Length: 389
Image (cartoon, rainbow, N blue to C red; front, side, top):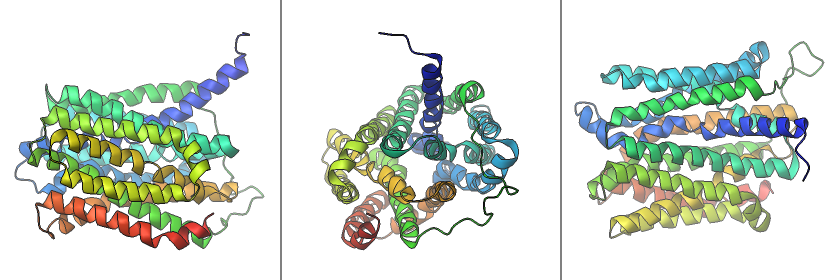
């Protein structure tokens, strides 16, 4: 076998660097598994604020997301991405040294500013650098690698939480490695300048693409409903210690990894039914989680939920960008990221409110609402899917 050429090595390193952004794009949810510990550490703080520690970074990220196109045009994508990674590494690890709830909340807000600088490029770089079936496959990998990164973080967290839950914040220092990769191998992707001959006013997105964005909002809103309530649900049912809860979240993400890696083949076979299967399967597994008699059954249902539901994300991303010109792809990438961020911010108050209505405990009621909503989406999304195929 001939040795790889320099161009082949460079292309592989560029691809590795681009995909490495997906590995850390979900770092805001790294502390999901320690929600019970945070409630014990800050008993005077309402539950909704504890859950906002997980999702508040998504709201602050919205600011830098909106500024991202201008910052990228002025400073270049490499400088923006590297700055975001370093800022996130510093702010994410800061709570290890601070004890107060207010300082932790502030660090999470700053963390979000950094995430907003690098996270949209995890998708847009794939859309800009790669095309066709390979792009669709990479979008599936992007979802899978996000799940893999989250799983690796949570597996490590399951070990650290047994020692000291604050040590989990040190995991954010790994972002420095991503920054170093970007410094050496990330290519500079040019974006249209306002002074160029390209029209300044972006082409409006088709109506069916906005429908997919609305569906994306609901999809991630429901995902957060499960992820935020699962730690307390397991704790309330005495299903394992904090280490087991973090391990469950990690294995859930491994299920998402399998779905991401197989998305291309599944989508070729099922086409628009991929989304229907994802929603229906997720609704049934959440119902199974509510009916699970023991911790092992609950673990299987949780993993199954994240596996089958992880087919919905790459489907929505791929079809929302299909048929768009390069300028619209950049616009859609920003809207996709903004949509998922807004859903993360509204998730805690919405599920806290809906959890008060039902026949069980708040966490059980929330999971019941999630299951019902998923099955309702299966029934009501037929026209949207037909317009986008």
